[in-house]
Length: 498
Image (spheres, one colour):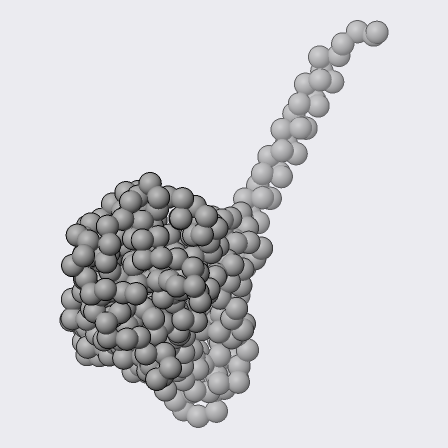
């Protein structure tokens, strides 16, 4: 190895520093040019300035072209705590001459800008996105750690519901929002979800669904952009693919229905907006959330009950939930069950099953609404051949048995004849404390004795049915009481059922 030349090393270092300095100056110059000459917004503004000159065919047009400046334009709305610079590039949104221009210069469709001036509303209050950004990808804000990225065009009607009711905009550009709300009600979504304090508890409350952020949702199963709108769309297509173990039944919606329902979900927002931004109809809607219009028993049933019970005329086994859905409008049930028992069942629910409590403190239904549901159930038509004798009906509504029962003998009866269905999810859970608390002994006796029409439950009394004696049925009832509790009646006080 030869001697080290200090001069040569020193020269290399100097040249290295010179080259590094030149490259650094080059990068700084490029950054300065990119920021001050070739910035995306500057290029767009210059292109729009040329378009204005091209459109300047009269004195006013020439004046507008002459006044236009290549500078940042923004709308500052203190009432909404918003600064939006979208109009820097979307400079032609209120110029009718730009109706056929390419984006981002095209006139805003409809009369939205006329009724919602940018200087009062801005852009992001409706479209979302990062309003202060000056480049499209940053304004779109997908994957930029921004809570509310730009809404897809087909979902922007969701924002109408922030200040307006779905009904008042249904023929003013909000048809998809209105259809989504109607679909929400028709599908009985409140059977599982609360909205405005009313609804079931199987799923989460939906009052602020439209303002959820990405970090609040499981995104691992989402195939598209990881945003709230995409999460909702894919969740409606296949709930279990997005949320492992979800208890939401696949809603079986068309793609348009998915878009409609997603639009409505995104409109559900709890926002502290100035009152002047809300329409009179919206103010009335807010009031009616705590003072709802009276709904008929049928309307209440369809909204809160039908999602599980369907028409309620036939008992059915739900394969998704692996549970039996009772025939709450079945001709046997509505004749044998007392009005008090039906109302208490609705009010208190059935803990340990899908049936929630619908009382005012839980499901949000008033006593008057529960009464109307009960009246609707009991108004179900009964054919002459389905009529139960008055004596049987009278006995079913009394808390007493025709003979004294023995729970030890009843256990053997239940194990042999009842457990196969009632302990395997193929029939109601008869040991449920809420059922046994409210059901009179006579109701339990009559149900076992005469069964339930249009359900798998047969009648067991007499040789032509299950071959039970009154004693067998009384024993079975007392066994239920011994296991599940409830009010035990005295024997011999009911009308004889033989």
